[in-house]
Image (cartoon, rainbow, N blue to C red; front, side, top):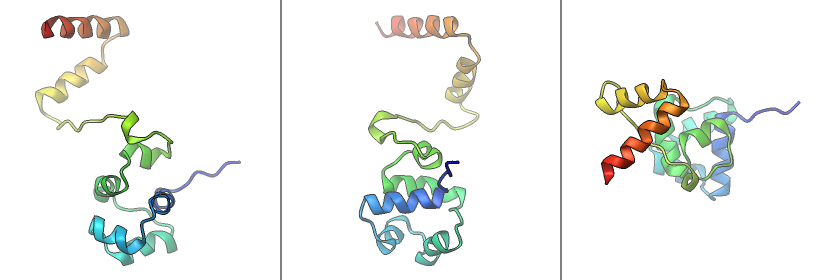
Length: 114
């Protein structure tokens, strides 16, 4: 049975691929070297509030880090939308549409651009 890597194991793998030492990683992220060492020794994972900082330093998406995918940053574009904004509400509404309705909406958006 295949065992999945923990988040911290993926972090160390990515650090190795990018030839980053724990010291360099610590300086770049602002995360204490002792905390990074704990991830390795105690097999713990970073706290959620550190994920975006880690992703920025390792040049990966949160999806790539958390899901252990092989997708490069260039292949996946993501945006952060704040809950409670009109953009967020629009995306939630769009998600609830059927496929044919989404296609009509995209067609309408294209027509608006002209």
